[in-house]
Image (cartoon, rainbow, N blue to C red; front, side):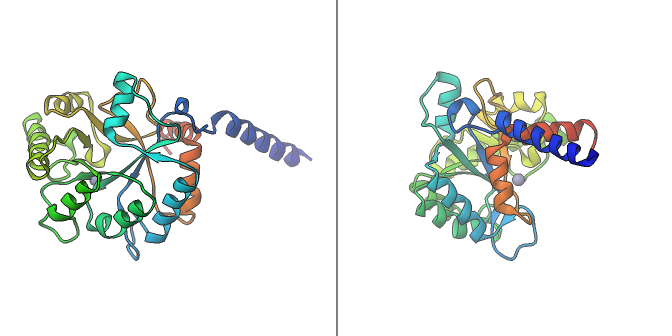
Length: 263
Ligand SMILES: [Zn+2]
């Protein structure tokens, strides 16, 4: 009897939490910014989704009527009250793996989606595991966006401010030189940043930077530390994706509690 009451209480609290913390799909719940890395089969890395898993997730977003947006549209919404469709979503990829071009790009095109890729500029065209500039340019011509993930994926909080400035400015200039278009956005390598780095990012000419702070981007979010929703491979990859997307606030609260008690 005692345990039955406890279980009932837990279920009731769960239902109430889902009711209050489950996201609606209108903009007041914030804009989800998904964060992917690799899309490749047979890679033993939680950051590498299989092609099938990635296709399933894009098929879901497509079937549910999500509209993919660009960082420009997101910033215009945050800074200037620009309009966004309900069910707006920003899809981002970090690092610039070649499988983003070979595997993710065809799937994104199939569903009429766009995405933004943050490049480690020193390895683009120099390492076969990463894209080359012809592939990047081809995607750019199809409306895909590119930003910086620094020159060499260094933890910006672990180096001198001079070195950080170099990483930020040179990677931005490299993309602009190759793609003949302003590179206004950054993703922090490893998600590491601090207030000093935020200043350096603004001084280096970026309009906004994406972190891995779990959550949706809201009116009032810090443009130099925008929230994202990392997507991983797991035993239940689609369920994890679904819960992270639909219950972002609840998952964020659980993560905050876990961090506070050091779990
Ligand atoms: Zn990275």
